[in-house]
Length: 466
Image (tube, rainbow, N blue to C red):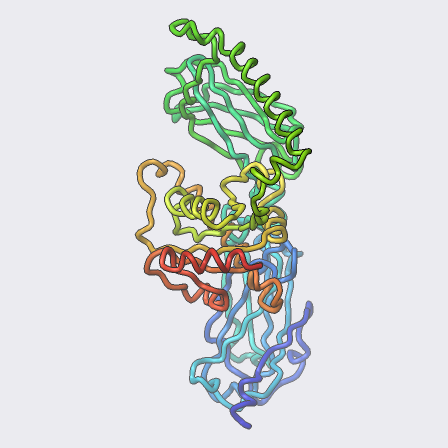
């Protein structure tokens, strides 16, 4: 019974802006200070909240004075902002009868709170209650914390970073022709004013000035010679109401446009092509006549018995494929999608095939929508031998960053479905090569797992069994 009691030790925290009442009395015995104090940033645990909070962790010293410990007070102050001084008091729910928890480690506690802004310095102070008496050694321990910028994988989901364009994915394409560069990009719902620059390492080669754009996809032509555009990049500068000209900018390297196939009839070396339209017209008439004849025969129940006596095909199964960041999209995900379409009667949903929709809707809304519409959700893992060759090295970094965001969001949605047996039945795990689930994703072990191509037939059968 005693061991069970120790496991139930916890804290209850609440705001306490002024000094604690224990400062007003003299205590015969007081607890020592904290052993360690650590600070990190985390996303808000509240559903759909875009706040980024401080996660404050501390450990207690292993000495006899721990029996006097009632609470720990934590105060946070933003650098240069005296008015932002906030404090919480965390009371311990039970008396400490032992210097260590039952597992023999140290008493460790965590508090998540205090919303923070990107690229800001915070000072954190903590002390135990009752505090040290007058003229005794102070037990305060302090730590400073510099919050990351909007490129951080956690901070970019904060409200301020989203207003700066941290989740804006313009999907820029910059195509070089002989006398111009054609630029396409997706605009953001945050604003309708943009500026397009073409630049190299030394100078700005072209400036569009302010562009008022209210369409989902923008198109800009830059008049420039082919020689001048070599090695240059295109930069898109958005102007949002919250950040004006200091919003997050996006860049893309210019590539050569693919060769255009000449329309039929323009190649003088083949005069017979001039008659192609006439031939096609005649063929179209013949096809129409045959179609009408078949229709009339079908009405007399002749063709139906001979030609159309085939079983009705089953509807396609919608499969959302979520792949681990280590998996190469071109070599592995593409081959799996082709296998699902050709052999497993599946309609495959992939983020790389729906870039425009993701740009318009945002990654979170797109993923939640696809999760509802999909019949099956496949988590794809592969061994570390799965790498891209030179044909896709130029974009591998961006693909892995995007797939990492998608995979983390999808895994969080899966964890929220663990209590729903109906939703949990959607998920499958596919392993390529000799690979096992990492400890971080051990929750997926409740899902059916298949090793391709060893379990290919069983995988297809289970995929189609709805």
